[in-house]
Length: 511
Image (cartoon, rainbow, N blue to C red; front, side):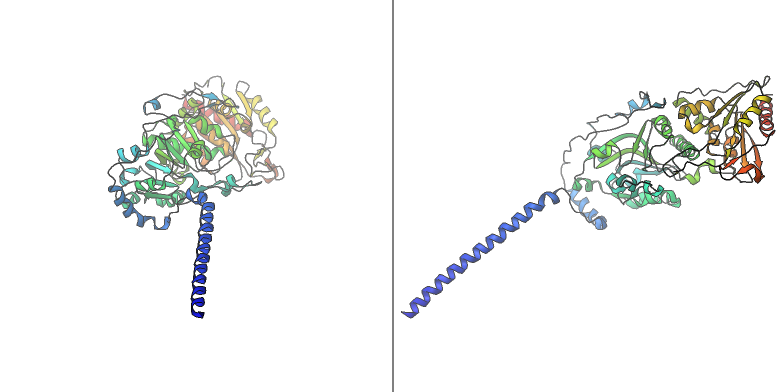
C-alpha cells in the first residue's frame, strides 16, 4: 500500500513539474517576442552592411545577379534636373531678377519617367573604364556618378557656431560619397585617377570615391534620382574675395572650353557650406543652376542622386592666372564676353577719344567693410587717407576726363561690372578689386599703388593678359602711412602724374 502511494505522489509531482516548465517556457517566448516587436521598427529600415568587407561581397553579388533571368521592375524616380531632355538644353532658361537687380537663372525641375536606374546602369555602357576620363591637367569627367549626400558632413550645417572657422564650412567626406556603379576591371578605372592624385586639392575627393558593382544598389534598396546635363563640383576657398572668385570662374570657363561644354548650360555643385556673400550673383547668374551639397532639395528627396556628367576641374595650382611666366591667354576675352553678356552688359570694344583726352577714369576706394563672418571688425588695409585731395587733383589736371569714384564692394555686382566695363583707366591702391580690369575693354590702363616693395605681381599679370598697360607707384615713406587707420596719404602731384602716364599709353596704342 505504501508503494502505491509513493508511486501516485511521484506521478503527480512529475505532471506539476511539466506544467511549470511549460508555463516558464511560455513566459520566455512571450517576453522574447515582445522585445523583438519593440525594436523591430528601428532596425528594419537600416540594413547593416560591412563596408570594410564589401569588396569580398562583389563576387557573390555578381554571381547572384547573373542568375537573375529577369530584371526587377523599378518604378520611375522623381527627377529634378536642369533639363528634361538633351534637346531642351539648347534653349536658354527664363531669367528673373534678384533683390540687387541682377539676373538670375531659376532652377528647373522636370520629370523623366523613362529614366530609371536600370536604364542608366544597363543601357548605357556600364564599363568602369568608360565611366571615368581624365581630360588634361587633372580635369576628371565622370559619367553616371552617384552622390550619396549623407556621407558628407560640415560642422557649419550641423551646429550653430557663433564664429565659425573656415574649416567648419568645408565638408568631411566618407568613402562612398562619390560612388560609381560599374562592371568590369575596377583597376582600370582607378588608373585614370593617378594623374589627379598628384594634386592635393583632389586627394580628399579621390579617397571618398568608391567603385561598386551595380547589383549592390539593388541590395541596398536606396531611392535614387537622376540629374541630366553637365555638372561641375567645386570647393571654394576665400569665397568672399573677388580676386579668388574670378580665378575660380575663369578656371571653370576654361574647363568648359576644354570639354566642349557651353558655360551657360553648366550646372554648379558647391561642395562647401559657406554663408551668403555679395559675390553670390556670379554663381547664380553665370551658370544654369546652382546646387549646394547636402542643402538642396534634390538631396532631401533622394538617398542617392545620380548625375549624368560630373566634372572635377583642374586644381587651383594649375590656374593660368597664377603662372608668373605666362605671356598670353586666349580665354580671357571670351571669358569677359561671357560674363558681361550673362549680366546683360554690352561687351563690345570701346572706342576711346584720345584727341580730347575724354576718357573714363574709375577710382576704386578701399574702405572698411565686413566681407564675411570671420572679418568681425571689418578693418581693411591700404586705404587712401586723402581721397578728396586725390580726386580734386585729377579733376583739376584733366577737366575733360570722366572721373568716377566708388567703393565697389558696396554696390550690386551688376553695377560694379557696368562701371568696370565702361572704364578706360582703373586707379587704386593694391587690393582684390584689381582683378576687375579683366572685364575692361582691351587697350586700357591699370594703375596700382603699393606701400613699399610688396613683390606682388598677380594684378599686373591680370592687367597685361587682359590687354592693358600696367602702371605702378610705390610709397617708401613711413611718414605717409597711418598704422592706426591703415591708410596712406598720396603726395600731391602723384595722382596727376599717374593719370597722365595712363592716357599716354592708351593713346599710343591707338596711333
